Image (cartoon, rainbow, N blue to C red; front, side, top):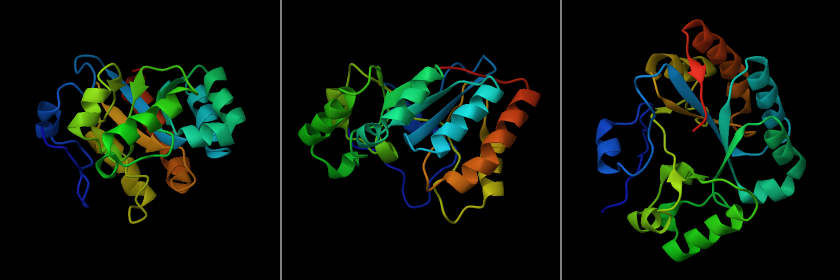
Length: 209
């Protein structure tokens, strides 16, 4: 089985062919329920993570935070705050490794180093880049991908277009990727409150993975 990837022009909506090629990975949830699944990658990040947590609390929304082990050790108070808010957590490797560029043995060692810092069955490969051998080695984990990218990591994308990426592509069961990182901060501050309000107006609830 070949490894999969997102090339330079990334798809906002994950192509159906990828979800069919890798059915063992979780790309979306129940299409029959008006529930969406908000996720944040690359934290914890003091300041922006705190703000995201407050915004989620204000809207009574749940989310999953895919966390980098190195940042958990640098910012333990922010990590603890996520847990105090009863939000979900997932492993995002210790050093945000690119699976394509990392031999499987080293990738799993890095995954395990992060796993020592948290208790979760959830894992998301950084960049969505993971080899078939790594998927096999992590068969006991629930590997969470996504079907909608906000694009908040993209410096070429405006905050308005980032919001439209979500509004125009979300459907029942969608797993959405945002980032609680300094790089994405400006867009997240604009997008998140507006998207939460829009989702509420449309009758969506926010579920846990």
